[in-house]
Image 1 (cartoon, rainbow, N blue to C red):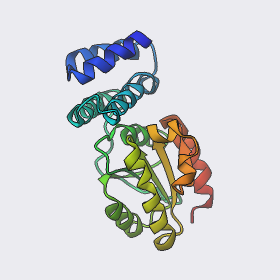
Image 2 (cartoon, rainbow, N blue to C red):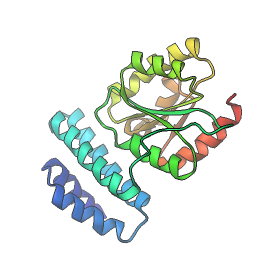
Image 3 (cartoon, helix red, strand yellow):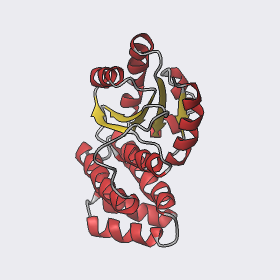
Length: 213
């Protein structure tokens, strides 16, 4: 699998969609779609994000790699519904990417939650001010934030600080490479929980929703 991951990463950096698709199809043929995403796409994009932080690749490569993988994930897991709903009696959930151009982690979590029967509002890419405003306006109970880059992860502190004052009901869940690399970072930015991967999202939501009004 290591050799496949290396080749997949190289294909993404070269923006070779055909080779990316071939490699992903080969892995998905022997695994569940979600496991294929978690074992190949996620680590490849994390590597590319680290290359950018080390000034070893261009931001455009990070962005385009993410876009290519988003397309592949939509094929594997299916696109989200165009009109989000909030099921009666359930906590109000929202997903966002904070000042990042990497939307894949959010898409995977959205697909997993949808498959488990949890409707979720998808805010897409947001600034701190936009995210706080929308969360308050929609009276969100559980806000899930995905990040790829460390600077974006550190901005979660601004979100949590403002929401503690403006929307105390809102619980914040974070995920993404910076939080996996530093197991204590989610606490430092004031989040209520951290998911190591998309598969943990459902269990976290079930646990936190017990306290949602």
